[in-house]
Amino acid sequence: MTDMIVLENLTKRFGALTAVDDVSMTVGRGEVLGFLGPNGAGKSTTMKMVAGYLTPTAGTARVMGHDVGQAPLQVKAAIGYLPEGAPTYGDMTVQSFLKFIAEVRGFSGAEIGRRVDRVREMVALDEVFTRPVETLSKGFKRRVGLAQSILHDPEVLIMDEPTDGLDPNQKHQVRTLIKDMAAEKAIVISTHILEEVEAVCSRAVIIAHGRLLADGTPEQLLSRDGRHNAVVVKLAADTADPVVAGLRALPEVAAVNPLDGGPVNGVAAFRATPKDGRSIVVPVGDYLRSENVTPEEMYVERGQMDDVFRQITLTDQSEAVGDA
Image (cartoon, rainbow, N blue to C red; front, side, top):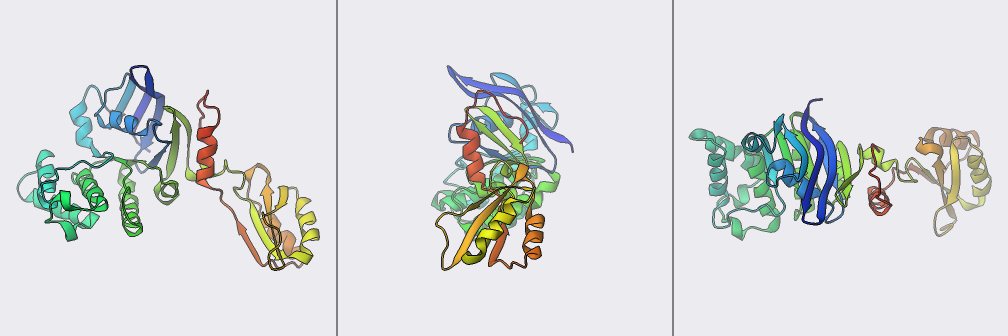
C-alpha cells in the first residue's frame, strides 16, 4: 500500500491552546480513514493543515510526497477538499459555480463541460443545476461542496462531515460514492456519525484534546467493547437454569449473565461473554445441540462503536493509545 498522506509529529498551537498535539499517522491508497473525536478534539484543525489552509506550529505533513509547507500548490492540486460548511458563492448557480471551479483547477474548453457533467451525475445535482446556490437546502449545498471537491478527480480526498445535513437516502448515495471512489484514492472523512465509520471506513482513528488515542480497523475498535463477540441466547424460562450452568462451564466463556428485565412472556434472555473477545458462537451452538436445546433466538453481538468512543475519549488521556 502506497502512503499518500504522511503526518509526522504534527502540532498546532493557538497561543496557549494546543489544538493538535504531536500527531503521527499515514493514510495509504485504497484506505477510507474515519477521523473521529469530540467537538474541539482537533479534527478540523488537522485536516486544514493537511490541506494547506493552516501552517503547522511543528512537525510535517506530506501529501503525495510533497511537503505541505514547502510545496503548497502541488499539495492543493493533489487534494480534493470539502471543508466544514462547504462555503460556496451563493449568487452563482450550481452550474456556473462548478464551471468556475473547473477553471480555477486549470481546465478549459470542452473539458470544463465534461468535468462538470461528470460530477453533476455522480452527486445527483440535476434537480438544482440551474438554481442559485443560496436558494438550496443545506443538504444540496453540501452535495455541491462535494461535487467541487471531486471535480478534478484528485488522488487524495479530505472531507469534513461529508453527509452533514443529508437525508437518509442522500447519505446512502454519498456513502456509496465514497466506497466506489476508494480503491484508487486515499480518503479521510471527519465525522461524528459513528455508524458512518462501519458503513464506509476501512480504518478509523480517534483523537481527543489534540492527541491521537486509537488507530485500527472498525472491527479492531469494536473489539474494545466488552460485548464484542458475545452470544445472546433466548429460550423458554423453565429450561434456562441448566443451560446457563452448562454454558458457564465452557472453557471459552468468561461469564453468562441475564439481560435486563428478566423473563418476558415465559422467555429468558442471557448473554454469554467470551474470554479475550474471541468468537464463541461455534462452541455455544455445539453445546446447545448436544443438549437438544433449540433456542427461541440466538445471535452474536458486535459491540457498539459509540460505547467504544466514550470509553476511549473519556478515560485518562495522559498517554496516547497505539494500535487498537
